[in-house]
Every structure is written in structure tokens, then in C-alpha cells.
Length: 401
Length: 69
Image 1 (cartoon, rainbow over the protein chains, first blue to last red):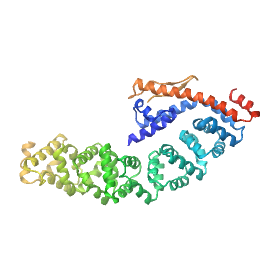
Image 2: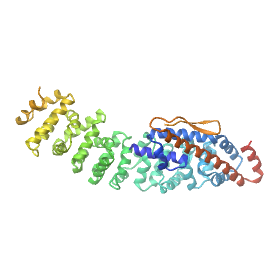
Image 3: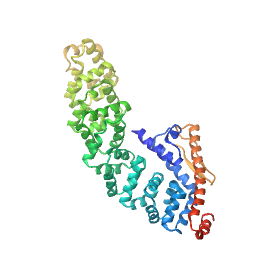
Image 4: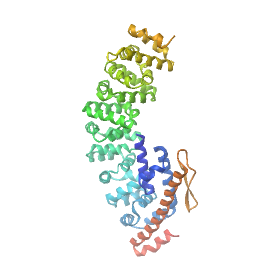
């Protein structure tokens, strides 16, 4: 998810410096926030370097008819310099000039301009014109530019742009690059439910990139929207959630994927938990390991989900414990589960019918050693009373009082 | 990361690199900024000359005096 934000910043900085993101990547080993700060500083410094001359150009343009200024701007100055000059013109004058320019050229200027310096002009451009320029940008797949302008367009104009873009994946790509979380929430709220559903239904296309983008968006939306997206995904073909699991595994994205799963309604979460790919040891280990580093609230939500679905999870957890040293990650979660369900989980896992006596002893031993290492023996002792006698008798030998 | 600031009118200077960025990386980025600064100045100068050719002859002198006082 962070990689996506960094990629967007590399594209924007590359445009300012006239180089590709690939050229920039090796010499800017910093995160998106730092890249953005650098971009803004570099852009301002480059602007300041030619500001005196551009200011004179802007003043001179007042002597000429607007149509001529637009033609000269396009033919002589090009998109980058026009974008710089636009911010030095009075908004009304800039708007008049812009309206004389063709859509293709306005799309070029949009890619170069800093929307913050031209926000007033952008807000004044008629909706129909914005829709036409947006069509050019979508055809070019220039989602970075479109995402940057979302903050500066009225909701009425945004609704018209959304309605004019038939492909839901284009909308997803644009939303990925929206910079303001509150505006992103408004944007998603403008999508009819049928279009959200159509978008999520395509998450099983490609190699997981679509889920990465969706998670990047979901992570800045509120819990209500996360629940909506999660429930829609769970209501669709199982391949949609399977693609989520595959993407989270392949790209190590559980810290982004878990909040979406945990926001689901109980019915949807049950569908997720029932997926065979969730039962695979690699998935369970990755989920539990990621959860250990997440917030207290997230860990509690996960514990409640596991507690609700203990019966489904006993066999997969036992299988995962065969292949990985998992108790260290599992124990804190187990101790957050309601006592009655916690007892069912631990005793069922240790006593699992799939395990022979030696393996049961090995499980119990690993569990108790993890509890002692984490100073949680007092929390664990009440559980031991619920173990069958042959396992309970082993406890003193494993952890002498 | 790096900080940039205009120094006089001849060059955009780059401050010492920040944490996580090597001197070589910082220097390479500064090189790109400087190259773009020079390119931008050259493009602007050329653009102004091209623009003046589109301006009615009667206004051209006035505009040239405005642009190059």
C-alpha cells in the first residue's frame, strides 16, 4: 500500500524534473511523505527560478486578446510553462484563456499544474468541459492527474465525471491517487452501490494489484465503508475473497487486509473464515504474525472473530502448529478470547484427534513455554483445568511450579 | 529528505542529504534539479521568442520592452 503512494509521488516528481519514475527510484530511497515534501520544495524552487520572467509574461498577456493568448500559449509555451503562467494570472483571466484551449492541451496542462495554485480556476471550469478533459485523461490512463484534481472539483462536477466513466476500474485507479482522505470518502460515497459491486467483482482479475489499490483506499475510509466493501466482497463469488487472500499473502499485506475483514458483518466474516485458502498454514501464520504488531483494538477484534468461529478453526490451527512455531503469536490472541471460547480453542487444538500422543505433548509443551516466556502463566492456569487428565498430568513435568 | 533553496539567481542549491539518502543519491537528485532548471530557462527564453512571432507587429515592441526591461 505504501509502495503505491510512493509510486504516485515518483510519477509526480518525475514530471517536474522531466525524468521517468524508474530513473528517480534508485536515488530517492524515502517514503511517500518525504518524497511529497521534496517534490513540493523542488517545484517551488524551480518556479521561483523563473517567476520574475513569467510574471512579466502574465502581465504582457493582458495586452492581447484572450483567444490569441490561448493560441500562443499552446504553440509557443507548451503545457509546463502555461501551467506556471496560469497561477500568475487573475483566476477570471486564466479561466477565459483556458476555455479557448482544446481539451487535449488542457489535459497536458492539468498534468503539469499544481492544483493548489489553480484551485480557484479549476473550480470555475464548466462541468461539461471538465468531463471532456477527464475523458482525455482516462484515455491516456493518467490517473495520477485525475486523482490530484478531485480535491478541487465540486461534488456536482465529480458526479458528472463519475457518470461519464463507464469502466469501474478506471474509477478505482483514480481514487487510488486522491490525496485528501475526506474527499476520498465523499468520492466513494457518490458511487452507486451497483457500481461498487461491479468494481469489487473484478478484484479477481490480474495478479492482486487491484486488491492492493482497493486496500489502499479502504484503509483511509471509515469503518462503515470498510464494512460495506468487505460485505460486498463476501457476497460475491468466492474467487473475489480468494484473490484478497492471495494478494495479502503475495505482497505481505495483512496489516491492510485484516481491518477490512474485521469490519465485515459476522455473516461475511464467517464466509471469509470458511475459505480453504484461509485454513492453509502459511495464511494463518501470516495473519497471526501480522496481527501481533497491530493495534490493541485490531487484536481484540480478531480475537472475537476467532472466538466466534473456533469450531471451524481448530483443525486448521492444529495443522498450522504442526508446521510452524506459532504459539508465541497465538497466545496473546488466545488470551483475549472470551474465557469459555478460549478453553474450547486450546483444549480442542491440543487434544485434536488428528494428533498422536507425542504431538499432543509437543503442542502442550510449546503452549506452556510460550506462556511462561510471556509471563502469562497465571492467565493460562485456569485453562489447564479443562484439559483431559492424560494431558493435565504432563503439566508439572513441562513447567515445574 | 533533501532541502532545496534558490541561492542568488544562478543555481538551486541542495542541502546536505537527509537520513537514508547517501551523498551520491543526494548529488544525483541535485543534478537532475539543476539540469531541469537550465532546461526550463532555455525553454522559457525560446518560448518567448516564438510567442513574440505570433503577436501583431504593432504590439511586439511594447511587449518586448515589458518582457526585457
